[in-house]
Length: 407
Image (cartoon, rainbow, N blue to C red; front, side, top):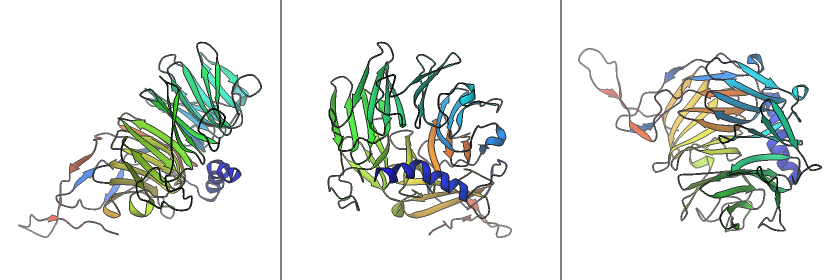
């Protein structure tokens, strides 16, 4: 089972990238269906730029993105890159430049120290600071395993999610702590993701759901699928939709969870599950989750990106690339009903998406065929009333076109 999971995160995406490919120049939206009259709609990203090896990336397979002010750090299958948003210039580091390991699976930037922490897929943990790389692995530290999936910064601590548990490194004292099934409620020790906010660390664990660690008390709490069924979600909204979790994101008092079988939202009392057949998720196979607020979250899946733009109304924007025409397609939906379609020259360079990153009004999407930058000029949260398009029916006609697009 564990071997197949690693294949899903890493090997499957490589195979997919070999099957599909090709990019076109970034342009803004060209075509949109008329706005349905009287319906409030979310913001749709239509201005996109893409970056590949042709632009200086060391590899097109993007595992992690970390936006820091005017710079964007990019973790790829063959090195680290830093993009200057103002100039578009890209600087890269590979093993010949001192990077300890070529495959980068996680990134976390410390605003406090200016250090970049780097998760290495098979190489342990690295830190880039003042032009130098420092390296920790199983043989020289308390890192529990060298296959790192996620990194989170908590005060002076660095949390590292690995395939054999989680490790915590205190950057001030140099002390290490290891969390496995021996001292944490892990039924399995394969840790896929880690996040921190508001005094709590959240681990996404294969087969163990979500584990919450309260920093002040050192207490653990686990979130599991209460019905105990691996194949189906037997009872609706009774907990997380599945125990094979791939990521967590806590913001504005809301816990967002991604799994390989759907997504979940938890407000401290109530759960809400999401599946592709009933909403704007392009697939239930979710590689990463990023909450933008308590009402908006972005999900990177194997068939595109699904953005829940407004929780209260269950309004989504789904971003995919048409592999036949190379057009970008954004679909606005409310539940299963499509409200609007927007086609553009490109949005994401590939539908196998591995990472989402919020950057103010902008978004960054890591895919198996390059990096996408969605420029959010005019971005707004939630919904706004649409301005109906007027039908061109001849002189004296002032009736709007109110025909929505439906499945």
